[in-house]
Length: 324
Length: 305
Image 1 (cartoon, each protein chain N blue to C red):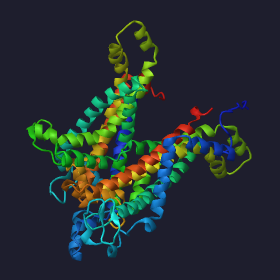
Image 2 (image 1 turned 90 degrees about the horizontal axis):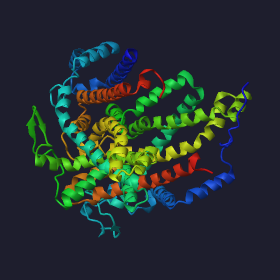
Image 3 (image 1 turned 30 degrees about the vertical axis):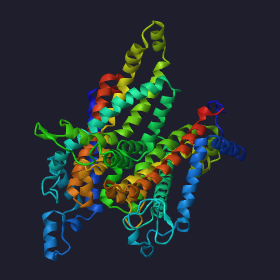
Image 4 (image 1 turned 120 degrees about the vertical axis):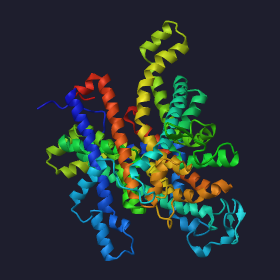
């Protein structure tokens, strides 16, 4: 177990390291930082001075080591635009994105699972067919276009919900939150639904497939034979067995919600990390781009690591090195 | 030498003409797949003959008149034809803009998907056929790419390379190649244990010939299914990237960029500038997926008699 744990941690570290190389190479070799950082009107002497002060005259591996040492200490440079440390800038925008992602995850679970259960229990019903058709649309509709249609319909035509910004926020634990005020919740409604749509379809399909599988099991037939109420069979015998894998997958998808929040935040002008990175890419604010990418990659590696560790704790076959 | 077990369930040769006819019949037996096929055909024809069928060239400033800007759908133009889907802020006919946008979207989407298919298939064939360390290395890379969401990988590449058509293609290839590799490697691993591969090896044919003339044709069915789906996905990824402003340049707008350009007029109620390009995109994606869904059904060996 210790050896397995060690190897798994090493693997995670290698991925993060590899990503840091990719990001570094992307930043310093493909794009020319001198071009970006030095004004085109600068004299030759000024140029040389800036290059030296940034350490860009040193060999590449030395630059990489310097970048890595700084990165480990949480220093990824200052944002050119905001003139504050890039990493803390990204962190300051994180709660807004987390709010959206958590909201979307909850919607996916509380809408996807009941609909999936229903569709799995009555696979040939008219409503089930409608649900499945809806899930196909949820998969194929491009997120940005759905967001636009939401704005067109709910904000412009009906005037029910606001289309941009976070609304009123409340300060709790030193962080601004939207979901604690009514106005904030109204602002959250459309972006959260927009972000959740794809995941709702996914959870729905998984639940439906799982329900159909479980319903055919002997223990469900036995429960019927015992005369248990259908309600109890669904809630206890079927749902309980479905919940663990589905919640695991939703948890694993959390990282992708954060990544796809980029699109939703751009449409609804939601001031989260995603909007920040898109704006930063436009104005070539590279330290912020690097900080965002490194952080999201870290987040993915950690999510995958935690899931693996949990599985190892539950399933002894994983840690004994057996192939699954 | 171990006895060779008869496999029997799989045809050792690529589909022959009669099987092909059977396949075509099975494909058109489904209404939704036929609908998808007809739509895709119309869309492709419209994109190819964009210059002939559109009432104006939306990117020729001489043909645009600023007097006609932001007209709602159905208004007549100064030239006499009708703006069935309205005009944008430059006085551009939206029908023409959409058809030209469709051309860019299809070119980028199909081109990128094809490139990803070639790269992914070659890697998959090699991995599945060679096995061992090479296989492990390639599959490790596949797992790595598949563990990150497409939008993140694409964004990362465009953040470093900058926008532009070529870079969008690179980003889409980076997002998609791993799906092809995984699929092809799976079938290649099964096929390489069959007798016809053994026979080809017994004839001491060069590995390249075994790979591409013997192994490849028999890995085709799942590849065709996934390629169809991935074309739709490539179009969608390109549209998303262009919507975010990271994609194609403004001189050759794709559907995604058209949606993005019209977005600012949405709140003032001029929905058509951005709604209809999005609808065209949606119809394209759904039409391709309808075909793909049915292809998956008829090509699934479990569903065959």
